[in-house]
Image (cartoon, rainbow, N blue to C red; front, side, top):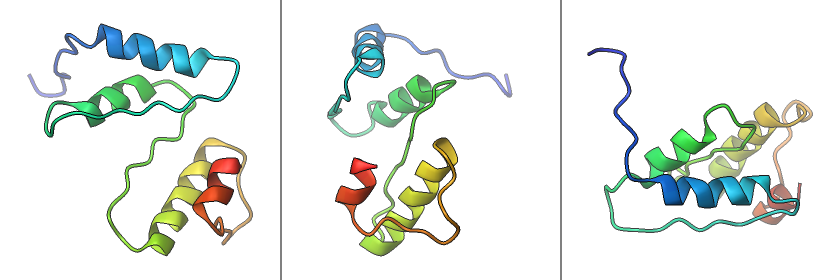
Amino acid sequence: MSGMQPNFIGRDGELATLTGAYEASSGQLVLLYGRRRIGKTYLLQHFAERRRVVFYQATRQAEAVELEAFTRQIGDVTAPLPPGYVFPSWEAALEY
């Protein structure tokens, strides 16, 4: 069964909530929380497939390193940013 993805079962409600937020005419913030190891990341990855979204998972590194990686991710999804550019703050990145 190599190459097959596991079945995605029992997440219709969560997917509908994410889809509603994604399709809203105004910006939306969705908080996803729950116990460890119940598939939160997999849910978001599944949702993000074939959609124009910024999916960034922090790696617990220094803030400057995280901002640089987040800036690259945004540039990959939106219009390219100037070479070497890094958002000066999280506020600036999220406002962009």
